Image (cartoon, rainbow, N blue to C red; front, top):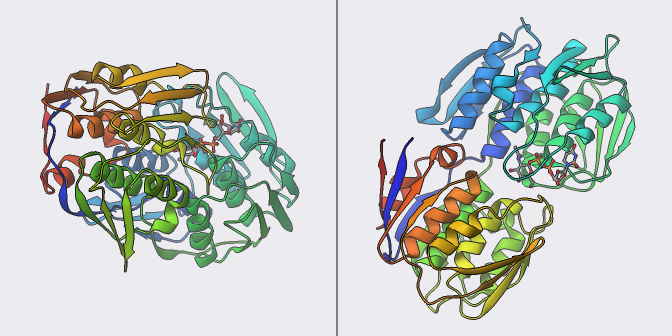
Length: 420
Ligand code: UD1
């Protein structure tokens, strides 16, 4: 397994191109199952999860022409030759559940492995299944698989989701585009990726209103068509590199992204003393005067993203004063804490909150990545730390950060990948 070696204490200066959003590209890839025509997606990040999702679609008979070095992928499912999403792919990537809605909507059936638990918590899929049932699908669980059937097609319904779920909203949004009649998704997720999916579906001929609010209305159509669509910027990568500038006292221009994608994160960073300015289509980030402790609670969008919690914690380890970070979305998302403590951080966990007392300097150490966002928080800590940090199990990073070493090295970081 590859490792990453970082020689820290270097201030980052320069420009970083923000990639397309992984969490937009994944549902957009599955949305292409809704039409027999070709869909071209642009600004798709070259990431392991994108390759896994493309491979999953190839199992259904989708013709995939990927040119990820140019961030472009064309997908066409003239007709599916299989409707089974096997355990081996789904267990690697929970977002595989996003094939369920499109397959049932277009083919009236699907068999998708239950994703099971993952490092950050139990993560059930009851919202996806209950919503599909309300659209008329019969769902049974057998031998670890979800077996969904709707031989006469889906029918629109009012669905009130008891918990705000991003992929749950996306699955039901996609399914409803081909249902008969009108569907209202109430208590829907409001993430920018939901708006991106809705915009792409509209350009495929879907009738959708209200995406980005808590109620989305979909008037079903009989078929959808092909399109060419450009994925929005990755807000989690944006926030991560903004924190990289802050934690190293650096000065970065984040190219092609927007503060509108990270409203709460940018507000909290500004309270902590980070200077953030939108300059046209770029974001200018500096932290010339050090970092103050701020309290953060993760929440669904527009609240503070749970996917930036570990990175914010890395920043708070070197703040003046103290900070309380409360995780409300996932129950087991503090696995980076013991690793940050190995680097000299002072953090204590109390239930779903972590109390971080700032230290003047982190020290490099060998550390272990446990999940995607935890691993990047260790990279951030390594950039700030004195001496050498080795991050083990970096394959997690490759699921979510495109060319991360190259992007950081270009701004003065000393970071390299070591093959085992
Ligand atoms: C998505 C993101 C992930 C992010 C998360 C929260 C993608 C591909 N992944 O994951 O990066 O961390 O949103 O912003 O977009 N829940 C249920 N029942 C369900 C579904 C979810 O109880 O059927 C709960 C979860 O356990 C969790 C909360 O709802 O506590 C939010 O999870 P959800 O929004 O569904 O996360 P994902 O869509 O899996």
